[in-house]
Length: 384
Image 1 (cartoon, one colour):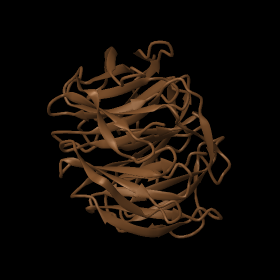
Image 2: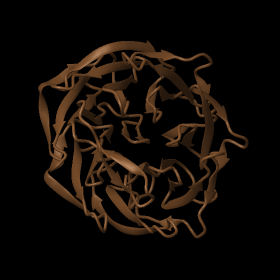
Image 3: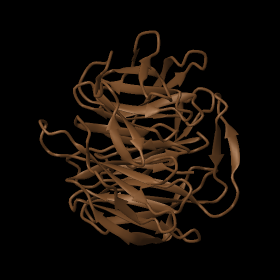
Image 4: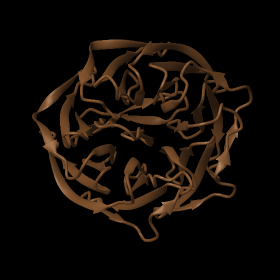
């Protein structure tokens, strides 16, 4: 679920009938020091001063495309090598390690997951290893410490819960190894994953207004008491989830509603914020993402649009800001670490879309060029 990871933000999404998927991850490579940006909660967010690279997966041609990412303008340009052969059939989601030059790609049709290293000078990829997964791996996320990779696999049967395979990540090589006891049952049909910034809890959203919470110990997953839970609001069906950078709040999109929650960092439990759910224009959501500076929330889904909302810092309630057309079915969202640029993937119009974000209103404006040809794409993600 592709993927985005910014100091603990992990994002990913998928859609099952895609012939081509895109998962683009921008990796801040290089050994230079980082400067910090303060968000409203006081959390320090690393701001990249290295050389960012981007990668996209194409599941029809089974290649990975490389890009340079201009952090000043948001523009993308192909790397010198450009494309790399994938190690499996139908490469889908990409996950990253924030402090290392590693990326991980799910190979949906091969039932494998591959690890790559990134050349900090050129952006070229080198395969580290490819390991088995459970059936049809699609959503994936790494923990904030970059020590574990969590991969959700589909079972293809609504009566059989999807599973989550957990891999340890070698900090010196990037090699991944499945941990004892894996895979773990999710208890539902997985639609989205996110991890608390403290690394202690995995949040799993699903169908039928359900979500699950797992405690994490040495990578092993244990459902917390009462899991899976039923949403207290929403309009049923599929839901997607995202946590804020500081882990204090979570937002769940279900139907045409977004629900705000406070997050207990000790127990992992979600508590609804006082007030009614926010009514939005986006129906069945494919992805919800929180601005890294915690000023806004963005949604894409099956409503032909990308939608933005502002966060009231006093009570974390949401106010609808506006929408822009994004093709037939938006699949995923990635936001740059400084909160200036947003990328929305779309499987139906053979491109992903680039926008600048107004730093006050969160309104989106298409960049020039606004679109990047990529085939029917799966997701977008940023790491800075």
